[in-house]
Each structure stands twice: as C-alpha cells, then as structure tokens.
Length: 163
Figure 1 (cartoon, rainbow, N blue to C red):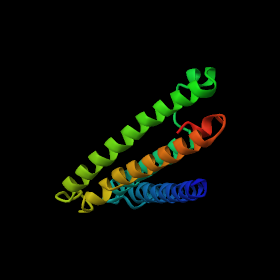
Figure 2 (figure 1 turned 90 degrees about the vertical axis):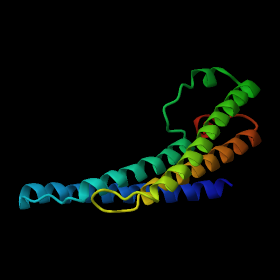
Figure 3 (figure 1 turned 120 degrees about the vertical axis):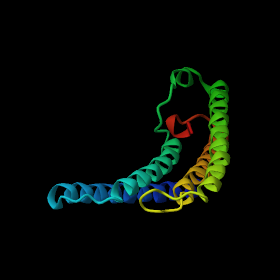
C-alpha cells in the first residue's frame, strides 16, 4: 500500500508540475500577446483559470497525504499513545467525510456541466468539473491508507501520518 501511495504522490506531483508549467506558459503568452502584438489571446485567461482549478484540487490531495495542510496539531503533539491515535483517527474520519462530500457533490456538478459550455473555449464544463470527484476519490484513498498505516504502527511517527 505504501508503494502505491508513493507512486500516486509522484504521479500527482508531476501532473501538478506540468499543469503549473502549462499555466505559466499560457499566461506568459497572454501577456506577450497583449503588450507586444497589441492583441490579447481571448482564450488564455479562461484556460489558465481551468488549469489552476485542476492544479489546486490535485495538489490538495497530495498535500493531505504529505501532511502539508495547515493544521492545529498542538493537542496531537501533547497526547501520546492510544489517545493520540484516537484523536488522529477522529481527524481522519472527518477528512474522509469531507472526501465523500466532495466526491458526491463533484459528480453532481459534472452532471450539471454536461449541459454547459465555457464562454470562450466552448469546452464542455464537465471536463473542468471532473477534477472535483477525482480529487475526492484520491483524498479518500490517501486517508484510508494513512489510517491503516497509522493503526498498524506501534507508535505514531508524527506528521506523515496526520492524513
């Protein structure tokens, strides 16, 4: 399971890196087009925004897995042993609930997006919205995996397990 986690994190990291590069290139082309050619690219802002949405949702899943989100961990650090694991388990259950809500509402949004097109690109909005349930499913996987790893460990190893 840890091997799959590392592979998924690496793949998501590369996907987010590629999306960031692509967004920077598109926005740079937009700026150059506007100031040098005097004619802005009409589609670039919209595409840059959609890439940013994808990058944000995929990055959220990676951040949850690596424990990089902002967290109030004062209580977790003060507790030891079983009480620390119990608090972390409760936290993981809440994050899992968020992942379930994100996935369910994301699928509803994708369904709604089937009937919509983006203003400039005329892109079906389902392609923009599909990242929401995808990231929710990835988030749930990482939370379940992290919880299993935490429960299997003899003692908490700290931030890595705060999924």
